[in-house]
Picture 1 (cartoon, rainbow, N blue to C red):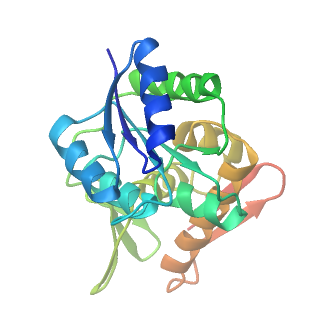
Picture 2: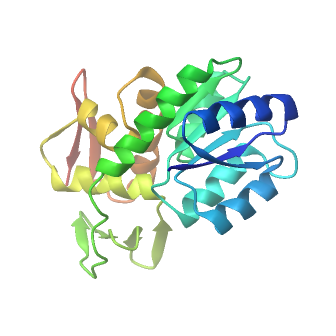
Length: 228
């Protein structure tokens, strides 16, 4: 039985979601604010997190950011009435896997939960930590530690930044297909995930800009190419 951590401060909605998930075979832990949600996450290690964005004490974005620091793989679904593209992109940048706008149907939420749990179950195990340093121009990329170094300067990458840079490195001087990256790292290649990927590529370009011999090119309609 999969455990869902539901973090929702609207009591009536939370009760409906809890009951609906319970009758569909899920175990549900409910928190009414972000701080309680983080505490329950640490205590119960849920299989998936479903969190409102507008929460008291610790909002959903801050909650997701902390969850991602502690667990890079647990699926996260945001529930929110906010639908501005910037909000959606930020949610994906922080490690969210899906974004469901209020009001929503319970059937749609359940389908999305099951889809994400299915992907998590099929995902390959994380690679063992390794001291290997990858070279990207003048940079050293410590993939296992998610760190990018140039001389004395060091950037601590997020999990998704490190995974994207690793794929670019492995396909260096060749085209990395956009759709493949979106399916592997975001779960699917719909529009909002594509916007989030563009943001991550822009960040990596900024991290690598001290070496003019390193470039990440857009290959229109196909993907990206790391030149180094």
